[in-house]
Structure formats: C-alpha cells, structure tokens
Length: 451
Ligand code: C2E
Ligand code: MG
Ligand code: MG
Image (tube, rainbow, N blue to C red; front, side):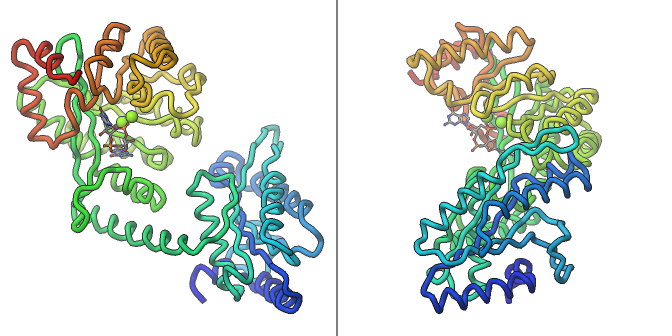
C-alpha cells in the first residue's frame, strides 16, 4: 500500500469499502468513494479551541450522516495511529462510500447535497461559523477496481477541489495524477532552488509623477531554473504556498531586499521604502514579527525603510491574527501597504479597523483607464478614499501616458508600471535611479511613456 492509501484506509473503512465493491461487482452497479474535508479547519480550530472544534466537527459529521442513505457508509476520519476509533474525532476529513448508483450523475447529486449540508452555519459557544467543504469523488469501476486505488484517486480529486478554490466537488480524472506528480517534482526542485540560491530579487521603482523621482521600490522574486530559464512567481508561488516553502522563500526575499536597500542608501542614494510582498502563510507563522525584527537587526536597515505588502486575502485568512501582527509591526516602525486593492473583497471594514500606510490600486483598474467610465469612476473613488484616510495611494501597472495623466490629474501621483520601468536587477536599477536624479527627469520620463 502507498503511504497515502495507508493514511486513508483505516481497517474499518477498508472492510466496508471491500464489501460494497463486492456487491457492486455482483450487481453491476457503480460505487463512489468520496473524500470530504472541512475547509480551513486549522483556522477554525485555532479560533475555537480544542473542545469546541470537536463539537463543531461532530455537528458537521451528523449533518453528513443525515444527508446519506442508510446503506451508504460514512467514516469520520481517525488518524492513522488509532486502530478503530471511529468515534474519536481528530481530523477534519471524512470518507464516504455511496453504493448502488446507476449513473455517475447520482454521485454528483449526493456530493452536492453533502456540500450543502456541511455548509449551513454552525453556532458554537456564542459564535457563528460558516463552514464550507471540499469533496473529491472516484467511481468504481471506471476510476479504479481496488479500495486502495479508489481511495487514492478520491483523495487526489479532493486536493484538486481545494486547489481550485475550495467549497466544491471534483471528480477524479486521469490527468490529475500527472498534475500531482508535476507539482511534486516542482516542489522538490523549488526546495533545491532555495538551498542552491537559484532565487533572486528584481526591483521595480515607484515613481512620483510630480517630480520624476524614485519614491519607493518593490522587490519581486524570480527563479533561475536550470532547465526552464527565469521563471516568474505565477509559475511557482502556488507550489511554494502549498508546500510552505513560501516561508524560507519569503525570508530570503526580505533579507535580500533589506540588504539592497541599505546598500543603496550607503551609496548615497536617498532613503526610500522597500516593499516586500508577504503571503498569508508567513503572517500566520507565530514568529513572523520576530523574523522581521531579526532581519532588520541583522541587515541594519531602519524599520521605516521597510514596507510590507499584503493582499486582502491575508486579512481574510484570519483578520484577528493579522491585525495583531500588523499592530506590532507598526509599533516597530515598519510600513504596511495593501496590495492589489479592489480585486479581493475590498472589505471596507479592514480599512476602518486597520491603519494601513499605503493603498495600491490594482492593475486591472489602471488598465481600463481612462476609457472605461465605470473603472474611471471607481478609481477616482478609491483615490478619494485613500486621501480621506490619509493613505499614500499608488497605481500599479501604469503602462502609458493616458493612464498616467488621468491618475495624476485625479490625485494619484505615485505610480509603478512598465511604462516607467520594468522590474530589473539591482545594478540596472542603480543606473535608472541615477538617471532620475539628473535635471528634467520628470519631463524625460513623461516623454518616454508610450502613447
Ligand atoms: P504584485 O505584488 O502585485 O506585483 C506586481 C506585478 O505586476 C509584478 O509581477 C510586476 O512585474 C507586474 N507589473 C508591474 N508593472 C506592470 C505593468 O505595467 N504591466 C504589467 N502587465 N505587469 C506589471 P510579478 O513579478 O510576476 O509578480 C506577481 C505577483 O507575485 C506579485 O504581484 C506578488 O503578489 C507575487 N510576488 C512576487 N514576488 C513575491 C515574493 O517575494 N513573495 C510573495 N509572497 N509574493 C511575491
Ligand atoms: Mg506587490
Ligand atoms: Mg499588486
């Protein structure tokens, strides 16, 4: 048995599944193995504590049981160490066998019903939780003939349901195996890349359109892959996130960016904030604040020259933890900016409750300027919102003169984008920066913007 099948197949579940497969073989019916997992259970557990999260999972289990027929089998997943403790609820995963199906669509209907049943709000200890569930389905005989294979394939489909944004049902298809193995090999080469220093930062300047001066810099990660050339973050960040390699990757970027910023200051360039992108996984590390403090101390960069860029999704993961972390960082003197504003839930309550320093208007807004009237109206409203809240507002992805002029005329003067400068390595940025400090930089930059 593979380790995966070993983990899923508790003896009791295996026995039940084998029995149902024998029946299905005899009757010529379909059987579905469904793996279901409560989304974000770790976060729920952290906020509820041990006892209440057990009660929560039991509620979910009862709902699933109620949504099944008596002849179906539901196993509350017990960890591998316990031999038969179906009652001991430890994980958040459920294994379900649906027998006697006549067609695949039947499995989909039941899976959807299970997802809906698990998704109704649960009130525990005075707080209301809105659970959601991801489900993966494998069908006998098409997706496998043995209990091992079916369980593994259902688990793979569950992984895809989670990757695809959770709260959904996925059926196994054979390409999943290839994708899973591609991901594994990318993960192992990324691990290697971090050790072998194949990652490196590039830097993109933030320009003040009123002066033509560099007023900030953003560090962006790149991977010099030995076979595939230089890779952009879109090709590996998801894997980094899932494998938690984002933690060492993020720390490496922080250190490199802080060192580089100090080196520019020591070379006589004016002090500007260096932005580093931070993921939700990093913020959730218990020692995150300590890591930032340590990196600042080790590199010698003053905290006011470091700006951490977070997206709305970071706040959404766990707003209470995130607020506490950012408060500590602000006390330290580090700046916090909200990246890609307008693409997530753009919840105004985050802006009300937390004192950010910078708001970055997402590129998807800027690209529609100035033609799209609704985009233009929203952009102006975001600029006004930032002004009233006392935030610096930066436009991302400024590519041409029409966009820059519109933004500048409407009160957003800080800009980042290919129109001014692409992300480049440190030495190249030194040259660009020096050029910006010679007379008439503002006019030259404006003239160089594509029409
Ligand atoms: P972001 O933080 O919003 O960074 C801006 C992205 O837009 C960068 O893509 C940049 O190259 C690109 N960009 C800037 N100006 C323009 C423009 O005028 N036109 C177009 N089409 N694109 C422009 P990049 O470097 O591929 O990074 C993508 C995302 O990956 C970043 O979005 C950020 O969320 C994430 N990322 C990058 N580096 C790191 C890192 O070190 N750690 C973490 N956690 N995330 C990172
Ligand atoms: Mg950013
Ligand atoms: Mg952005």
